[in-house]
Amino acid sequence: MTQAFFAPCPRGLEGALAEELREIAARPGMAALAPFEVHREVPGGVSFSGEMAAAYAVNLHSRIASRVLMRVAARGYRHEDDIYSLVRNQRWEQWFSPDESIRVDLTATKSPLRSLNFTALRIKDGVCDGMRDRLGARPSVDTVSPDVRIYAHLTEHDCTLYLDTTGEPLFKRGWRMEKGEAPLKENLAAGILRLAGW
Image (cartoon, rainbow, N blue to C red; front, side):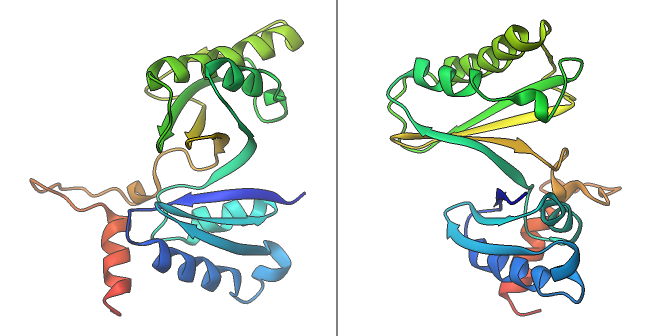
């Protein structure tokens, strides 16, 4: 089943990431194993679509993406109750069980809502209330080491829900043994090298 994905990256590297994703998609054998299509660059990332295998391929091969998010749903909103309703109506149990822990992260661009913390709490409530109604149990919350990370992004009029397919950020692969006073994230460094034509 084809899914919509979003790969966030450091600002300014969207073009480099889109180019990298097209290269990954064009690798020998990728069309048979994990075909995907790169769609558009937006500030802070690139959208693409394909089977779940495409998300695995990008998680494995991308040097510039920070993570890979799978789009679950999107809808317009006017206040927090609209977002709560959108979240509650999703069948989260198709992706994880009430035995697993969750964390909700929220970003916004020009959202008219007054409190993003309250909105994140309403998203968590929507997930837990919906699962409790359908399954009789709800997931717990773990903000440090959750089993499942749920992301939401608000624009001025729309709310988009995502599930994280990555876990720890991709720049932590092969995590550095030594840290300087101001270490550069590995995906930012890879993007800068790519822009420089290295």
